[in-house]
Amino acid sequence: MADSNPYGSTVLEHFRRPRNQGAMPDASASAEGVNPLCGDRVRVALMLDASGMITDARFVANACAICVASASLLTERVRGFSRDVAAALSDEDVLGLIGEPVPAARRRCATLPLEALRRALTGQ
Image (tube, rainbow, N blue to C red; front, side):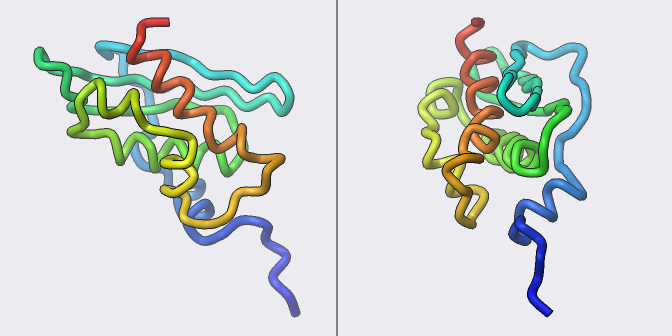
C-alpha cells in the first residue's frame, strides 16, 4: 500500500513537535505574516541583544503543516545570527531547511515565516 501522506519526514516532525512555539511577551521585535489565500497566520518574535544578535526566536501560528514546520526550522536556525545575516536569508534558504521538495502552490506557506521575520527585523 502506497503512503498517502503528502508531507515528508521533516515537515511532519516539526509540525507534530514544533520547536520554539509560544509567545514571547518581552520580545525586542515581532511581526505577523498572513496568507489570505489559505488563511495561514504566523507571528515571529525575536530577542536581540545590544549588538543586534538574535538570542531567542519564537513563533505562534494558526497555519498548515508546511508553515508551522518552516517557522519551527527558521526559529531554530536564526538563533545566534546577526540582524543583517538573518534579514539576508532567502526563500531558497528556508526551502532548503525543509530539506524536501515543496510544491510550487505551497511555497508561500513555507516562506511566510521568513516574511514575518524580515518584518520584525525591519520594524514594519
